[in-house]
Length: 611
Image (cartoon, rainbow, N blue to C red; front, side, top):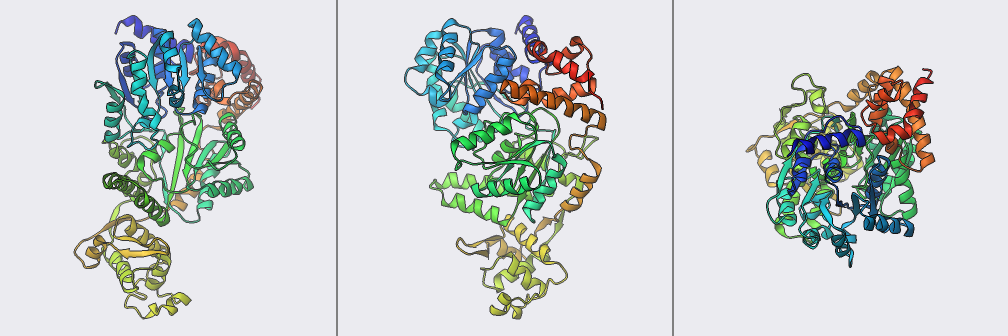
């Protein structure tokens, strides 16, 4: 790669986007793209994948065609690029006639550097032929995992992109995704590229994300406690059902949060309005199903909560990846319970898929359950799933990034207690749930216990030294470990598996993790940090002052607040307090176009702040 190309790329990075250096992994992708090679990049959310096709488009010139799966994402990126002075447009079903006409005028004039389209639009009649005549120089495929049947967001239209490439004259391709295990990566490469591409697999680690899990115990209270540290911050609460999104949003509004529901069953206009409010405003909490997905390009999401356990680690990683895209610290919390595990297993068993696909989906679900019940570093376990080995996050002097390393969780021999519980399952007929089993073990006489004559079982009262909550937690862990299975789809309850039989008969030991004291840690965290972002009082005051100005400008211009400046840039302004345009130019994220548009207004706000 000639030195001039690298210096040109770095000059554009600074003058257009306001960054002094590339993030890890970016230059390797950009360098290969500028050399005219096919590139397949697997990089975590927040690593700046879009820069990997935007910078080459500006350095090399010509027209880069960007395939993006969602209209909201396209419009968002076009808005950001336009305000940075980049000639970009999109063709999608939401275009007005004038927007579409303007895009074609600019295409025909050769003015555009980037054109965003959906895979469905490309499969329509005539578009690819018109674009070939205009001279597309590169094809960029965002969210490339959608091409794979093994990916969690499979889109059949993505399978046609190899033919699109051929129809465009065999132009070089840059494909990017944040989430793909080796099997999915191999499938993507086979589907999109005639020859093996230049592969860039960057670390999956997101060191700015704090990972936390907790067994369900009054989930609405757990979520409200978690959000206490994030008042004023934007976040997502993922739910497994449509009704749950609406109930949670209503409950959070009662506690003073600006909380909105989002799910596929809502009226389209309301759903779009709620998404726009979340994208454009500060301090909004959206309670959503996974329909609230890839189009979320908001960089300042400060937390992601899973009110219900995700179905796979790929989905979990993709969804938590929507937090902290600006590189600043962000929190995650995942709640899980027996019902989640049983539901997910049942969903797989009821799918109309072949045996091999079912086996793989169960394997992925079991990996998710293992992550929930792990006694090891969450971060290490998560990265290990993607084939990346690393030391625990309590190694060295780095801040702890997971709840287990902060709680010193460890595996302990649970064989004796497990045999007591498994015996209760067997002696009661293998059809009762955790609460009933806990009553048997603690010797609690209820109407159901008396009716079933379970107060006469040998196991009645053998576990009275422990509270009921300990036995219901043990049932969950044994279910997660595969020692118990769901006895009945209609009525629930537990039955023994082959593994459960082996443990009960003393042929197999079992070690389990004691539940960390999440409530104690949560209360300690609330005492120790009034602000989740860690800003001191003076900087926090200036930051909020600048956020108000940003929101005012964004509303006047009808764009998302972060398109003006990101939180990361505002925090840098709040800390550095530049006094003139030259000092403002040195702030990360302030390119020349934005400096000219907004520099004076923010300098005036900084000078006039009284805090």
